[in-house]
Length: 203
Image (cartoon, rainbow, N blue to C red; front, side, top):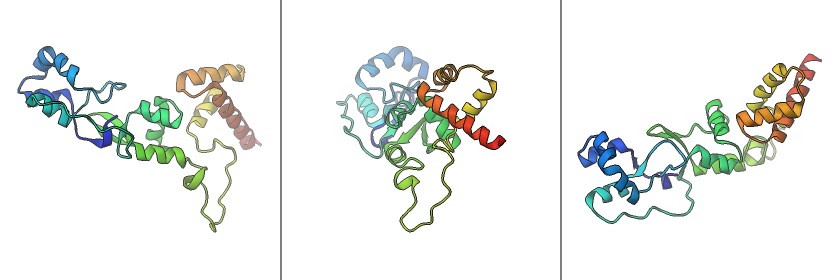
């Protein structure tokens, strides 16, 4: 997490500020630096550091503490976002790509989401609460044909049904859960919804 969206630097920037090459920085200085300045995204392959902490280290000053507590402007990784939404990091990435979630912002190649956006998505998921329901006095729109209508995983479930070759639904659901995240039970429900939808189309 990047607290409150604070400015960050990667190792190439830090080496440049230190007046050495990135190779020299990593070989001679990075280990000692990392003992004092924490990586803000430890669950990501990206190494990003708070700019104020970096500058203090290079100046030989005490390292300032980072803000604590949750803040709407915190920038969260896919793993942190997934924990809030109750899905997997790969599903977070898929939802963002397919438009079911904010595309987020990018810092040095790391895709991140504000805590405000993710809490809003959690609390106002499509079809639930103020974000998904109709306002008082508005005409009621068409009802969903099933609770997973519009869920991008439904396309995966349909394709799995097509290629399952008569395999038990439980086995197919377990394989989909292993590949795409969520629980086998959720995938069983998605498979059921996909099958009912196909039956309705064929009927």
